[in-house]
Image 1 (spheres, rainbow, N blue to C red):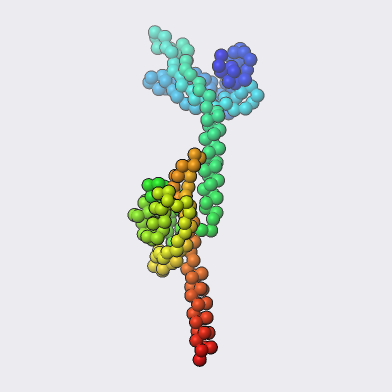
Image 2 (image 1 turned 30 degrees about the vertical axis):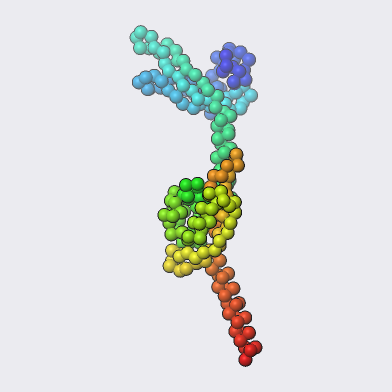
Length: 231
C-alpha cells in the first residue's frame, strides 16, 4: 500500500507487526492510526508524526472515521493519510528565514520602517523607542498619513511606492515624544518580492540632531573667526 512505501517498509505485514509506541515517532502508547475520538460524527482530522523504518519522522494529515455495525459498535476505522512532511519542512524554513530577517532588522542602529504598497507600516523596529520615544505598536498597521510623519518622508515614500524611484534620501524635522525637536536623515529603498515585483519600501532613519548642532557650532566659530580677522 501507499503507507508501506511512505514509511519505507517492504511489506504490509511489517507495519502490522509494530507496537503503537514503535510506530509513533514520539513513542505514545495509544494507537497512532484509527480511533476517531469522541466526535459525534465519528470523524477526526489531526496531524500525526509516524516513525519511518529508518527512524526518521514522517508527518501526516490524518482524516479518519469510525465504521459502526448495526449495534453501534466500531468494527473498523477508515480514512486517508496525506504526507505533509515536505510542506512542514518548507514552512519551518520560511519561519526561520522570517525570524532571521526580523532579528537582522532589529540589530541595525537606525530606525527601520517597512511600508507596504497601501502606505501602511508593516514593520517598525524597536529602535523607535530611542529615536522618537514611541513604541512599534504606535505605527504598525497605520498609514503614513495617519501618523505625525514628516511631509518630506511621505513624499519620498510615495515616489518609491509608485515605482518612479528605486532609492532616495531626505532630511526632515520631527517632534520627539519628550517634546524636543529632532533632525532625521532617511534613506528609502524599494522592496521587491521573489519575482522582482515591487512590494513596498524600506526606510532607514537616523537621528542627526547632534551632528547638525555640531556643524552649526563649527560654522558659527568660523564666522566669528573671520569677523575677528576683519577687525
